[in-house]
Length: 252
Ligand SMILES: *Cc1c(COP(=O)(O)O)cnc(C)c1O
Image (cartoon, rainbow, N blue to C red; front, side, top):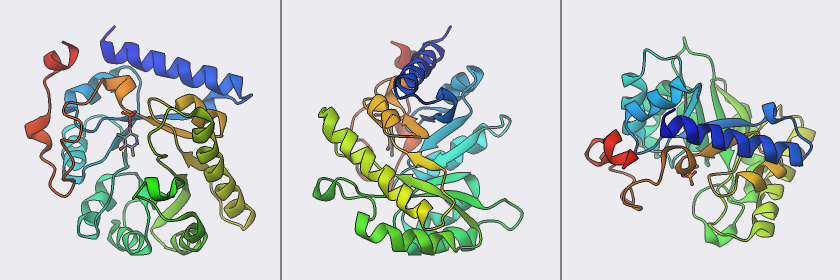
């Protein structure tokens, strides 16, 4: 078994135990493997271990990787910050976008989605952590944005996504995730057909599943620690190929 296959098995075990502890069916929690900064071969290895959905943060890197793996039937999720001048490739190379945080981005994705493709699945990213975080719509603006996005013809609003501030404070994380869940419940009560809570990463899978996550986005626990934290700090100009490690380096 490869390292990636073993890691996937361990992560699936964590999800299953967390779901059981919360009285949930583990099958209601999908695993999104976050492959940002890792080469196509790493994704291929995960796919060989029955992983189907992959998350990418950087537009060109994700588009290139999806194209390189076109022979596999994979599902691609864009989860990074999205600038309005980069929406076109995202609208057509990806099946999901988790990081919609303003109407202008949603309108462009809807307008640019190819007519022959099904509607693009989207989540609205909500800033549940206040000043500790810069991405995401403020909770008090999320309602209006959600209703506007739900009305766009080429998008299908699936739910909400959040990235809490980095912390080991488990009760705080639980409150952040619970806040996202409450917001989704409110929107459902208002008539929106939402089925997705995209929350939880390598270090907080358990807290997120306990609070109702339906998609957990996991990178490090599957592929290992990413090289040079902050190497992508200039997110407007990623250079994925220059930074990708070989699998030998990865497994060293
Ligand atoms: C990188 C990233 C992840 C995965 O984080 P890990 O801690 O490596 O599991 C999940 N969600 C988003 C939005 C990310 O950018």
